[in-house]
Length: 278
Image (cartoon, rainbow, N blue to C red; front, side, top):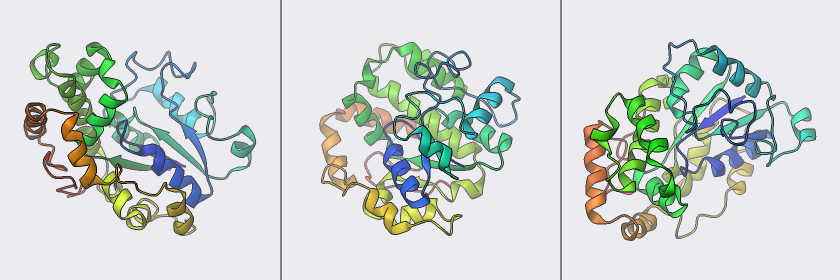
């Protein structure tokens, strides 16, 4: 069992596909989507981003995740990229979720036999992709207050309704990644996959993610990735998103990163500036 988590638009789907290819596994896709899982819906907050600290009990969520990791609580959404036959026959599962970063430390504590893999991508790239994919239409109440509460700050102080949507989505990225890097075990953080490395050095990135799996077929995993395009390259994408996020908003995002002490990335640098386990 491998649990792959990262913020939305971080490249988790591409990494999931590479991991299932290299492991000979089957995927379970986003079981915490509140509108797509009748089992998860009553347990999850309406915005879909549960916050559970590492030492909480959370029995309802534990029952839900226990079923997910046993290959139960399936839906058309979670099995869209596999088949029931494939799931019955497989010995390995990769569960991919973009809404679980704020409870990853809890997952590690509650399910020590589940291998957690964390993925991160430059906040400007994520926010730019979110805006392109219309995440900017999400209501303020579903984005800012949950992220602010998870970080222990006041929503109106840090990203009021009148602020740009880029600020709302940056706060979402910060909540996901600040909490994940703060609460995951050091050994787990050593297996962090950086989107930029997956694009430029896929062999290295995938070998890091699969270090505990001697049977991992690295060549097959690399071949499963789409060939990196000009748009996918970190350097080109860094220039391209300048047109989607105005300069004043980029400076604002940079200030937010400093305020919350998130230094894996610097806004004006396309590649990671610090590894998550340092």
